[in-house]
Length: 118
Image (cartoon, rainbow, N blue to C red):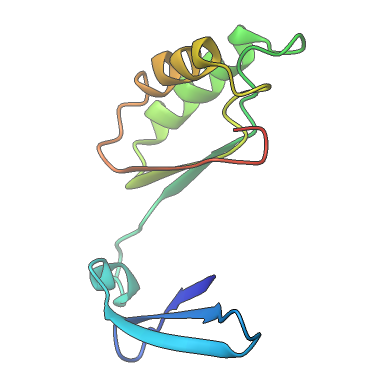
């Protein structure tokens, strides 16, 4: 599935392949269309990105993630995007650990996207 938000119309458009292999398109109202509007002069929109936490893995270093979260909180971003991999093996205790860390992010708007390890 390929999705994108059109800046000119504020509509979301999704394309997906049908079982026959052809592309099918759908238009949707974009609930976050305001994100695509031009910011007022002198304003900023800050996005922080975390990726590949790999909680539970043998190479996971808690201090590094704590430092990254502290720096993100200091930035006071408008939104935080955390893209997978949240875990190393997808075990319940790894998700619980990832959740404990992500709960320390003080930003009210967060998007979490699982990865191939999740």
